Image (cartoon, rainbow, N blue to C red; front, side, top):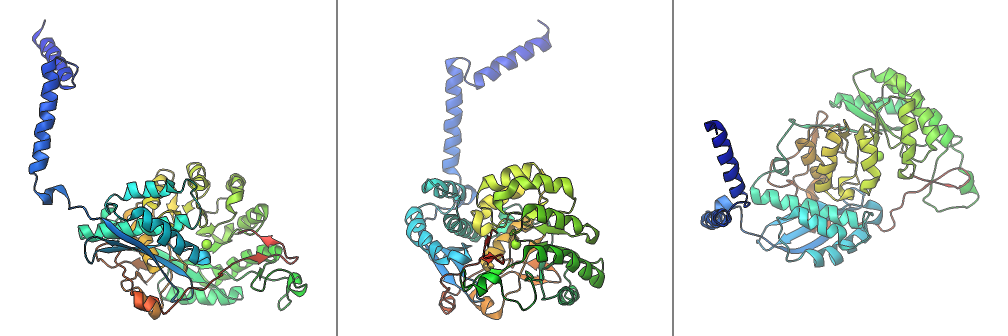
Length: 452
Ligand code: MG
């Protein structure tokens, strides 16, 4: 045998021994190595091993409404005095149901568990009720998940975005809402926001009725509930291209324009309307179809190249999984405090990265400042951020939630405190009790419910 061949045979034999396929001495050698490694771990100083375990002491919900929207914040207290985490579990319309889910079920399930094992806690809470993927329980899980990330950040003395991989941008480009009773009024408001430095703006001008000042037929007939809204689908679909035309003409090309359909119209009507928006170059059109009508995306994609955002009311991975890998929309805009928190939010963002789908997380007033912070920390860390929906908080809100994210010249910033960076003043929060029965339903003229 030539010397090089000899050497190769020898190396193969030694390699097999190392894998435990060789002699008994080979096997002993392997376990001997393990014992040495184990001994090394035992001798490793505590600071090189990670931190001492901390357990969850209690999980509770805090309900408050400083700006009118019902908000739910989850507080996770730990066995380490003074160490706690906060997460957003807001489901504005069914706030009290989330409080029960957190205080009764999550508290019992989580007390005594290790705060550090976020993925395991997420997976076990997720299946612990057997039935899953619905609102309420998903909101509770979101609050827990965000609070655990907050605690992990505090323990590591780092903002959460650092734990997710660090910053990929200096700040987060965001949009807010410009409305008005007429397209002209809407354009005036867009110009005001442009002066403040916004580069993106969602434009809405209400849901037009059949004729201005005329009550809906179903209301005159005494049908439905007092708080029911009214929408004329045909008038709405005619009004939006006109609104875009007027706003684009008045505000110029330096502003990106977005619009939210909020589902509620027939899919074919939405498709025809979106096609008419092409000359005005929308940044995206949001939520064209209800989740029950996902199959219409194929037709929409074949009909127009207007960018589409979808997913505000998604609960279930099966609602976004197929649609994302088939590139049925351009922006995924889940409510992070609805889908289960930062943990699934990061997974969705990573999935989107490989399919050219950017993020545009849900972020209006029905997300607490803690939830806005959770959105922002993800936004900082991911490559495929599209845009972030933002609101500006009132003084009352900032007193209840010190450390809230803020917007400057169209960018959102978080403070650099460890964790999510937002605290809650529970005493002040108690001054703003949540309202019962916060419902939102809209009917057509004859009283038929329109499905969001
Ligand atoms: Mg929306």
